[in-house]
Length: 180
Length: 165
Image 1 (tube, rainbow over the protein chains, first blue to last red):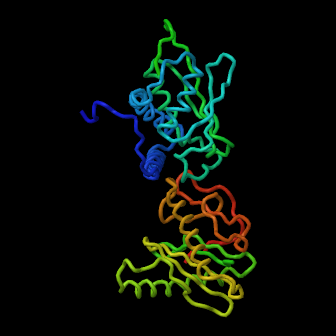
Image 2 (cartoon, chains in turn orange, green; image 1 turned 90 degrees about the horizontal axis):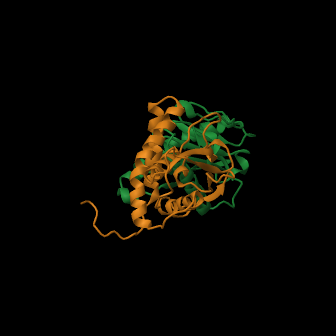
Image 3 (cartoon, rainbow over the protein chains, first blue to last red; image 1 turned 90 degrees about the vertical axis):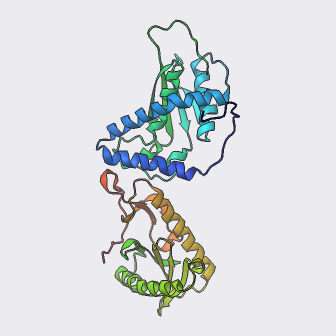
C-alpha cells in the first residue's frame, strides 16, 4: 500500500511555485501541440476529469463532510472546503437561477495564473480549464451530472474569474442519495 | 531617476531597452552597448576570485560628463544596465541596488510566464515588468513578454524603438 492505513488530514506545506510553473508548462505545451484553443480547452477538461475522479476520494477521506441535501450545499462545500484544501482560496458562491441548479464560484485570487499575463483579445483559451474538469469529475463520482465552464476570466480582461456549475437532472433518478 | 534601462541577454543582444523619450535614444543605446565591454571585464575580473564571492551588483561601470552607467548581472548571465543622470546627486548606491533588485524581480516574473520563451524580446504592455522609477522612462513603463506563436502582445507601446545590434 502506498499510503498508511490511518491518514490524518494534515496539510503539507510546500512552495507553490513549482506547482504553478508545472501547470503553466503543461498549458504552454498543449498550446504548442494543438493549434486550436478549443482543442486545448477540451484536453484540459479531460485531464481535469481524470484528476477529479481520483481526487474526490482523497477529499472525502480527509474532509469527512456530512450528507448534503441540496445543490447549494454541495456548491458551498466545493467552495469552502475543497478549494480551501487544495488551492488555499475560498471562492464566493452565488446562485444564478431560481430553480437553484445553476451556481457560480467567483474567484478573486487564482494561484494558478500567478505568473501569466493577459491573453490577447479574441483568444478562447481557458487557462484553468483543468479546474472545471476536476469539479466535473468529482461530482460525477458522487453520481451528480454537472456542466462546469468558465463564465468570466480575468485573463481575458473580465473583472473577475467566474466558474459556472450547472447541475443536470439525470434521467433515471430515483431519489437523492449522495454523500459528500 | 533612471534615464535608460536595458536588459541584455546572455548572448549580448537586447531583450528590453527603454529610455526617456525626450532625449536622443540612439545615444543611450550606444552607451549601453559600450558598457557591455565594461561588464564583461568586471565579470572576468571577479571570476578569478571564488565564485561565491561574486556579487550580482557591479556598481558604477563608467561615468561620462552627463551620465553615470551602472551594471548588474544575474547568475544566468543576463545583464541589466541603468543609465542615470549625473546631476542627480541624491541617488545613492543603496537606491541603485534596490532599483536593480526590483528590476531583477520583475524579470523573474516575466521568465515565469509559461508563454514566454527565454531569449524572446520583452515587449511593453503588461502589468508584470514595472520599471522601478517610471517617471522618466515613459507613461506606460510596463513590459510584458512577447511569446512566439498565437499569444504575442497586442497592446501598443509608447515611443522607443528596439534597436537590433
